[in-house]
Length: 210
Image (cartoon, rainbow, N blue to C red; front, side, top):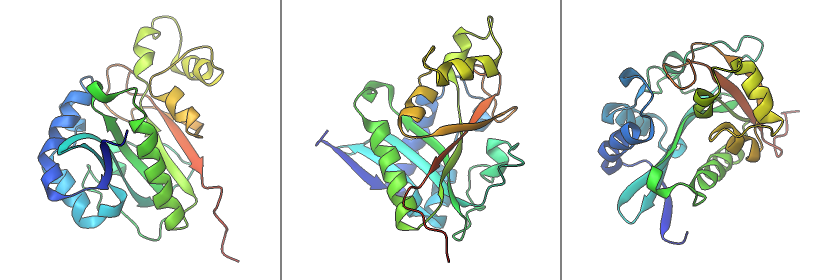
């Protein structure tokens, strides 16, 4: 693990991150993938919130996001629209939450704890800025193997109960997230029939202003 560096987004990462998107998300529609111009915008708007993992000079992981407010009573939204089509111009420095837009690790480096490191870096950003927590939409890649037998709601319930394992949701639950809702038509993803979880991590150090 000492060979890997956690840093923040820089211009030399834009093109490698675009390639990483294509490698990590083969089931997503092409319009759902971030490109170099998106990373350039994210860098200009909120570089501190864009986490990058390096193996030497090679980009092997990333976690992107921005600050925003979120209405849990009206959770329906699409990934692209909420993220300003990945340009992150919806970033609000005064927002109560960090919206986790994307987290990805190169397949050759999975199982080495990099996802946990990215989430730890995100949590540090939240603590440093005294935000309420992290919210985001989570993909359900494991649902593809079960959709013939159960609804997405049943699948998520079984993953939460530990009866099934989902590569993404099971990992998120282990990082302290809870599922607050399910979102239909969140993203074009053939594996999950466009469904996503609405996940939340609450910052235990947050103190509401008196």
